[in-house]
Length: 140
Ligand code: 5GP
Ligand code: ZN
Image (cartoon, protein in one colour):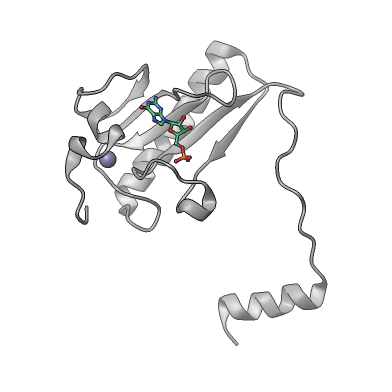
């Protein structure tokens, strides 16, 4: 989409096209899932739509739904095969959110008890601040 030029400028499009290698763990007509080359946890996989979309703003609802469905299936596959205790689904849209590959993907992270420290400090907020924020978001 946009000024995107296919496998020549997108590593995940190159994987879909068979022009770059990947350890594929799951595939449907519209999606592909493969092991992350630099895993955070054992079995860390990425689920992508085959059709290029940059991020959550760019992707259409059908491709997003297909990608989410595949993420559920990959979570089940990894749980069955690796015997993990839990799953995190992570997604990044935008550099500020740590996106580094600009072809939408959902990270599927198999988790075992005690493997990672919780990475996000709790911000905290007063009820008044939450009320003001709520008005900013929904209007009124
Ligand atoms: P992001 O930071 O955009 O949410 O995540 C991008 C992910 O893609 C990273 O976890 C990174 O390790 C992974 N990645 C980048 N290039 C490749 C590649 O060529 N092959 C595979 N399998 N994973 C990649
Ligand atoms: Zn792409």
